[in-house]
Length: 168
Image (cartoon, rainbow, N blue to C red; front, side, top):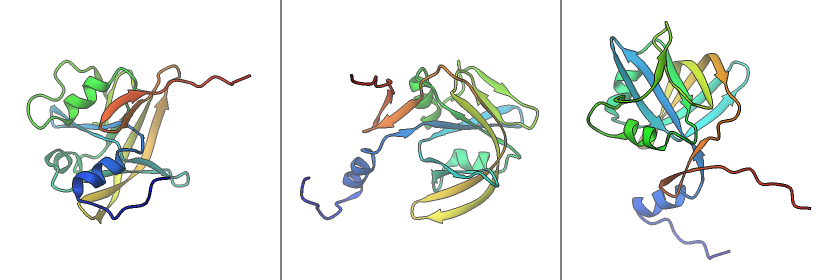
């Protein structure tokens, strides 16, 4: 093990946090007739009863200000074919949904196709935590599909997983 060092600036801390791989989600809904969405990699399953999940969102996010008022928000677990989609949904300007395939449900939640799972949620509460907010969602409906590997964010880039076979 290397010697432990004092925590440096934001760049050092970002690099350190980036050493922990996370799945990538898309939070999407319809805002009147327009799709609105963003990516988030800090997803956590919180509780089975009641069914709760959380995502951390940077404070001041313009997209979150639009999403948080929606009755229902769709959370899509992005699959291995979604690296370009994740970058597109994270961009600051332009049509984030141009060329993307998605499905809208009657509640206004929006789901990306070819995801590994879809969660229809409502905002339960928001907790201020430093420069981010922890958003707690109540899960109302969900679906999952087998056969799609997840998209993973690690060391500031997107990756996918490969199964490790048993060694004889």
